[in-house]
Structures are given as structure tokens and as C-alpha cells.
Image (cartoon, rainbow, N blue to C red; front, side, top):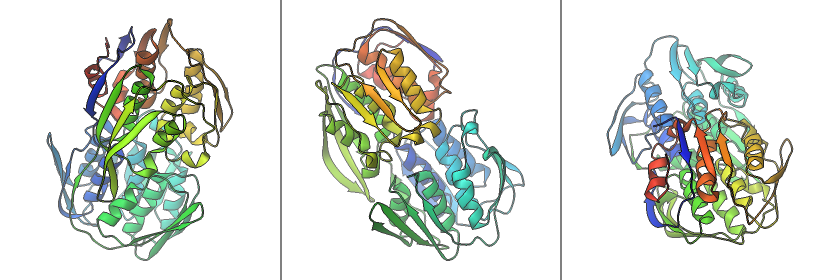
Length: 441
């Protein structure tokens, strides 16, 4: 892929049916859980992005074999004691926050040192939120300022913990659950509801997880040290990848799209609920359940006269990866949109709250920003005719893809740098845009 592209005209109206690649969160979780299963596990429609390839390379470094072909990924698990690797083995998580945090849990009982590292962007991120609970389990962790590179060594006798996770972080919750899986006794987590793919996979594997709802919290309890057999899994389409095409369709006049076989797990569909409150034309069709996950076809029609939103804070964790797109759509709403308690956006590949403010200002949209809140003053007649150059975004794949959607929806002449960053989560993003008629040079 070219590292810089030019977009010089808006996309014309379209009416298409598309399939997006497999869900990234489920792809990585399948790999990690299959590495601990007993026997041959197979995933169909696994995402072949850089983050997922990093996960496969990581388990290979730990002594687990796999085969990756066009239609499937096979992993040969050896159970909880199956990892076999030399002291000071280096695991490179690349840009993947999910892999780098979840793998702490699988290494809770590791015998040798592991050196965990990542790319420039990931190395800027704070790992204290997983370091703190993992030290409670007994894991030995050495780091400078809680950032990568980090040296990990497990304990022979991991001990169960009680932990409160009050930021709504699915990565922290999942890391703790993976550690609890290899720990005798009962681990308990009090947490704000967030993505629950790990819990659903545990239920699918008949692991002894219990989930109790208590007002605005969930209490998750888990008894560890129960081996499980290999499993097969069909990975549905990724809602985060779908969201770029949802946004483009809403913002392109006389257009319609049907996105097939998408994971619409309620912990992930905040963007759909937020956009519906804004009067966007979105429908879920052919809804069905597969291994606890809700799957549907998403129908979207172009929508004008969008309303502004005072976004309910309980939707934040359900739309955390889609906020850049939500902000873009708010830029053409008829009024002021308001968001609160969204400081978590500052802890992504780049500071997405700061990026959003600068990006919207660049295209002529007034905003007000604080540490954890954001106001967007929408302009329903927004049209662009200047030259816009997008660079220096720490190769954040979602910031890059947002720029494509703005260019194709609003016009102007765009130069977008570091476009190879889309390979992190969505390698065929540009080819799918071209299927809709986008002209990208």
C-alpha cells in the first residue's frame, strides 16, 4: 500500500451490499484462548490484520503451533502448561493494545522472563491498569514509568484476587479473567459494564464464570484451573470496521448500504444507538445468535436533518472506538452536541480527543474541549473546497480512516499520510471504498 494518498473529489451516491472483515476483538481472543485449549481449534473468517498477526506470532514465540490459510486459522493448543520458551523471549505486540494487555493474564504462571515490547505509539501508553492487578496475582513485573518495554515473570502459586475496575476497560477485565483462568480459587471483579466478548467465550467453553448485575456495576466471579477442550469458532464481521461505512452512507446523499453478518453485541453498538438518537436511518435486520454473540445485517440510508446529541455517559464504553466517527457526524448536526466523561479517548493510539478537536477545527467546525468533555457546534451546510493535509497522528489507524470518510463525504482536496496504518485493523479498507465508487489516488 502507498504510504500517502490523494482524494480530490466526493464519492457519488451508491447502493451496495458489502462484507467487512472478521471482528478484531474476537480474533485476538480466539487466538489467546485456543493457545490454552487441549487440541486443535479452528477459526473461520479470522481477521488478517497486523494486530491479529502479532497475536499469532506471540503464541508461536511461546511454543504454540498454528496454520493460517485463506479461509481458516488452526491453533494446536497444549493446555495451561503448554507454553515452552527460552528465558528473556521477546514478545512484540506491535500496535495492539488488546494483545499487549491480555497477554499479561496468560503469563501469570510463566516460568521464564518475557520481554514485552510494542511500536512507538504503544510504547507511549500507560500499562499501570493491568500491572496493578497482575502484581496482586503475584506476577513479577519490571517497567520504567509503567510503559513498554516491560519484563514479566509469573509465579508458581498465583493467588485469586478481588478487584474493582471502574473505568469500563474490557482489556483490564479480560486480562484479569485470563489470569484467573490459570489461578486456583475464586477471583472476583467489580466492574462498570464494557465489552463482554471474553465472558461470552468463557460461557461458550463451559468455564465456571458467574455474572451478577448490581445497579450500575457487574460482579464477575470465576473459579480457575479448569482445563477445556479445543473449539471451533466462526468470527462475525467487525462493528468498528462497519462504522466507517455507516458514517459514509449517512453523510452521502441518496445512498444506501447493507453490511452483512456483523457482530452487534450490545456492549459494542453504542454508535448505532447514539446515531439513532440523532435520527439517523439505521436498521438491524436478520438478527440471530451465535455462541452468545448477536449477529445482524446493518442497513443504513443517507440521512439529513440530523439532530445534535447530549450523549448519555452510559453509552461511552459501548462506543469508545467509534467516537471519532460520531464526532464527524455531529459536525453536520443542526445544533450543539455534548459529550462528558470521555477522558479514556486520551489513552488510545493517539490522544483522540485532542486529534478530534484539531481535525474538526481544520474543516471549519467550532468545538470546545476540556480534559474529559467535548462540545461540537454543528454546521448542516458544511462543504469543503480547500486543501487538507492529515499527518502526525502517531499512525492511529482510526484517525487515518476517519480522514478518508471526511474527504469522501465533504469534498475538498486531501493528502493523507501514513495510510499503511489501516493494516492494523482493516487491511482491505481502501479496496472496499473503491467498490463503492471512491476515487483514491
